[in-house]
Length: 224
Ligand code: DX5
Ligand code: ZN
Image 1 (tube, rainbow, N blue to C red):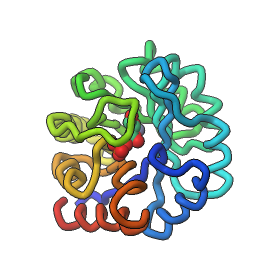
Image 2 (tube, rainbow, N blue to C red; image 1 turned 120 degrees about the horizontal axis):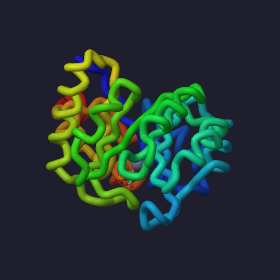
Image 3 (tube, protein in one colour; image 1 turned 180 degrees about the vertical axis):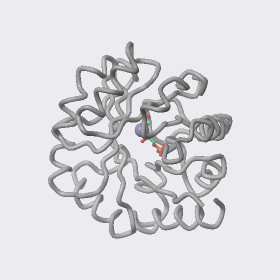
Image 4 (cartoon, rainbow, N blue to C red; image 1 turned 45 degrees about the vertical axis):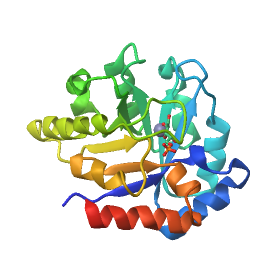
């Protein structure tokens, strides 16, 4: 069976305690973090960016998965690579030259991801699958944490997994992002996702951060 990754989304963390909260997740077993960048144009919200990523890189060896929800992502690939991203994901909907931008991410020595919104068909990324390490399937509309999981979007995880299998891309990661918690994480994993991003359910769940992380992990192990 494919191994699963549960990636806390730092958007829901307490930014005044970012290093401590990352350490709490790591003690609970996390080694992959999702870092949401918003520009107030592509999505109607602002979040964190290059200086925060740089500070974070200095305090953790975990895998840093940077999700760019910004217009003109090509302008910022190198600064995010230099700031310590391990993987950079850009949206299919906003990249004018997707093939070029994905190659640029790899040229910078980073893993490359492509994201699609709930209304975007999986077929729109078929031509770039050989050039990415990860496909991010949004299970909410991007811009905010704490939204409800869009179940219909999980069909695309199955679709992308089948497309990847046809191309012999056994190592392709399929990530789902938005509304992931103990009930929905197993649904997404069964559909074909192997990286589950969880913000509110980890940082704002009923227990401590560690307890919340482990509750989702147990649900995943039981139901995937
Ligand atoms: C939404 C972001 C998500 C967000 C998920 O635009 O891309 O990564 O942090 O938050 P939750 O898990 O609270 O839905
Ligand atoms: Zn995200």
